[in-house]
Length: 57
Image (cartoon, rainbow, N blue to C red; front, side):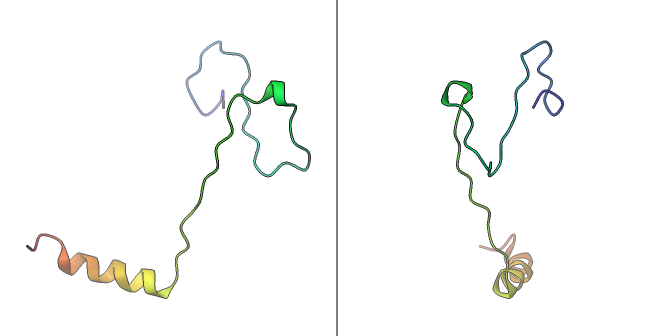
């Protein structure tokens, strides 16, 4: 994280994604679960229709 964020002289911070081994508990600052959207043809169609709806009551 130190190279991605302006953390100055902060100790080295690392982000671990899908590790083969869990990091030691005393080294974990936070645990956050994220979900990413899945895009399919219905999503694409909805995006196209969105432009025609913008600005209408």
